[in-house]
Image (cartoon, rainbow, N blue to C red):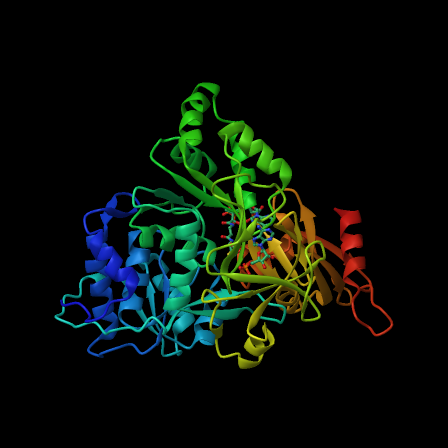
Length: 501
Ligand code: MCA
Ligand code: AMP
């Protein structure tokens, strides 16, 4: 197998780290193995073609070496990687495969049966990772220009179903190098990945930053608090990144660890060089409790699927609780009201510009256009600058909910729940919650003569929606609260649900 004449910068850098450990799952895997494995995957996907020319290749492979090999293989063959979550129901897979116009889906063997039911009659090729890894062809890999599309990540929006956020290799490089600079990643770093690999926090901030830096990414199949504490207290890790819900869960689990074991873990936790929180607001109580145990003031930063990371507290110097710091290298940020920049101290919507900002929503030119104002991406988040640091105030749209670090759309959930026979109409809101940030709550107007309880609705919805989109609170009513125009008054819905739960 020969190499491309021009490699993507990530690949060129990996060559320089050949013998170092790139990924640790059950066992160590070197950068050299990652290069040879991904070349095989690329050759297998090309099947005689010279270049995938941005064909969409979805993959459902649990966190581990094979996941990374497939991601890199797609990139090296000139395809667009579409990561899908192993734990999503088939209906979510089906929607994304169809929306992205996927040519091939690469799967781990345990998903074969379920994937077969999704792809029957679709013309989508399903191929096993192991089969691709056996390919040994003398293939020259294409020269992939970094300006080409690299990835589509699905994110919930303000309108109906989720949208595919398209980033180019250049975008990804800009997102990664900004963080590698700001947080001073080095090859001797070793990070623990517990986040899902269908979102930017896990894909970019943890995995790709590590691999760009020549560091090691240690991957857990999923988040499990006790196992995470044992790794944080192992003395082998330097970095950890997670969402506030995970820090909170870890804090709860700490109390259950026997004192003698805590005394072993504690000094190693303190010895790590950086712990980061993001994807949702970090409650002050969580920050303080975490500091008391580990000695670390969590570094809070702000980002979004469409832009990577934009704002961060400093690596060196004081981190201000309740703020997300200042602009990251290479990122331009401004606060605006009605398109006009506001002075410090005045709240405004965050707008972001720079090479890390995504290219487009996949095949949604109108929504892409609407997301920008004079070249600036409109985040939909409000913030204020106080003493030089940004403080996030909340979102401009009530229909966006953040739960456990996941963004979900109230409108998408409503649309699905209206398909239940007992639901005449419904309204979904985010209910404040100390553990999850927000929980999904639903007020249901029942169809004539129907009854409905939370467990029944949840079980029905579980086959149609990702687990984190499921309703966690339900109340039924004869009539949803509406204004004179017939529009549901969401603040009233929240009030009703709050008084019930
Ligand atoms: C689970 N449960 C919930 C929720 N999810 N309850 C309320 N709200 C929820 N959202 C409860 C249910 O009771 C469930 O039981 C039980 O927890 C176990 O569910 P499970 O799915 O197993 O939970 P988990 O696997 O332990 O997940 C918790 C988690 C996960 C590890 C915190 O939510 C997670 O990985 N979050 C990170 C998401 C992330 O990476 N976001 C970044 C997006 P039952 O099943 O009976 O109901 S990127 C982004 O935001 C930008 C770019 C940025 O700035 O980073
Ligand atoms: P996503 O669309 O899943 O990428 O989520 C991005 C959203 O997460 C942002 O628009 C914010 O609303 C929220 N977010 C990310 N980081 C923070 C933070 N540190 N504090 C508050 N909200 C955050």
